Length: 566
Ligand SMILES: Nc1nc2c(ncn2[C@@H]2O[C@H](COP(=O)(O)OP(=O)(O)OP(=O)(O)O)[C@@H](O)[C@H]2O)c(=O)[nH]1
Ligand SMILES: [Mg+2]
Image 1 (cartoon, protein in one colour):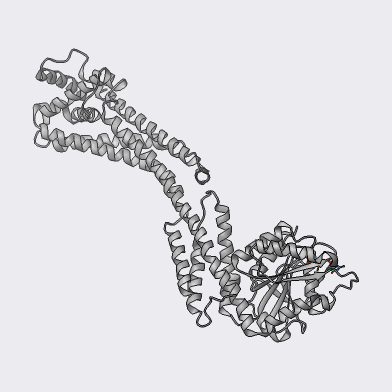
Image 2: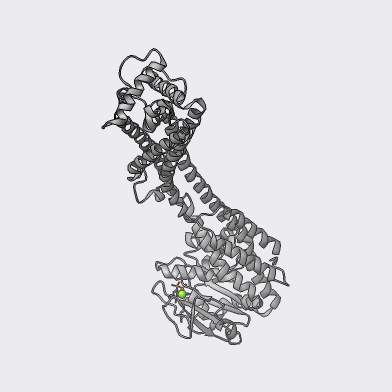
């Protein structure tokens, strides 16, 4: 046994371990990713081990050694404790499982240590036996040497859940395990799971092989010793207790002398005691590193998953915005209903041979439109509005479906999707879009007024009016990109070219360029706002998830701090 915990000042190590404990407690694993259950279990286990054993033990290195007697039901744990004490303090029975709450036997001179609630803080001391798992029966006994206490625990493989939980908690608080098994049970799986965890956590273990028929002793001992070596417990002391035929409830003194002597040899020598305590304590501290690294990796996966879920939403909505931006500028809106209204607006005849003539004819129609009601331009305004709305809704619908489908591919995403129907765009989107398009149109008229400063008195300006010019600007915005192709788009191109010519004639080239750019930017901003609202529905779900970037790094630093302090 090599003690690495420094004999002197433990303050730095305590501080580092308290820091590690805080980081481990604060780590959050809310997302349902692969292996998260194991990581959550690990987090609980590390937290409990620090709080129940490592920290209290380090604060009181001179407290007596706590040997916890553990093992499967009926192995003879209570019988062994009774035999060490020399009286039936713990009920040993035929009904399985027998022991339901912990029994702690210690020398009367050590009473002060064990009355102190800092040792086994969750258990209530009681002088009498009980079935309550929260109760600790305390048994001062001259049969137990000074400097060492023996604790009888419930069974580890119990049909009773509370028994298993209490046994696990008590073994985690031990300086040393006295692990009892029988000739009949020693190859069972559950005890080996426990023994493996003792190896992982670096706990000092001694094995008691109980109730062995004398003729089978050598064979069973040899087999068990091989198994112990295979499990990394080759160095653990192994005691064999033969099955006693004439039975009065206590083991004959001779059969447990070796165990008693060994316990005395630990208890009576302060150096040996300290060695045992430091061995287990150091093992626990050393084993924390690897386990905290696994936990850190699990928190990294949480952060990565958050980033991926966010990126999937961003990709879907960035694509939607791009799609609306492109479609609203490439002339594809200027088709069908919109073009029909445009024809109605500019007249259905042959295109004018000269621009002047065309403008003249337009002017007549538009002035007629703005003087009387209903205005032909209204139809075009509405058609454009409907077109933009349909475009935004289709894009939002597609983005919602795309983001939701991506999330549905992993359990963490599925859990986040629960609740409202995220795979559809929000019910309020149509009215919000309608409002946005109308506001944009109002903004375009405002821009025309600004750019028309100083030209408001001209005949052309007056003829088209703000509304007429505004409409032309909208048409121009919707057929912005060059290279329009055949068919409807060529017509759209024509509409756009015509609008541009008219606007230039009325307002001047520079003003038209400024106007078109501002109107386009305004439309883009409003569409982006609408889609941002849709995107937020997903991102809000993520905002509610308490995963922090950097948790893994903080855990690794905390482990390094502990290493440095050791
Ligand atoms: N004949 C005989 N019976 C024994 C011997 N050792 C233990 N027993 C009996 O085996 C049964 C189980 O022993 P316990 O000491 O209660 O076992 P335990 O490990 O404490 O069991 P749980 O409390 O249920 O976990 C009891 O009825 C004991 O009297 C032995 O050497 N010979
Ligand atoms: Mg028992």
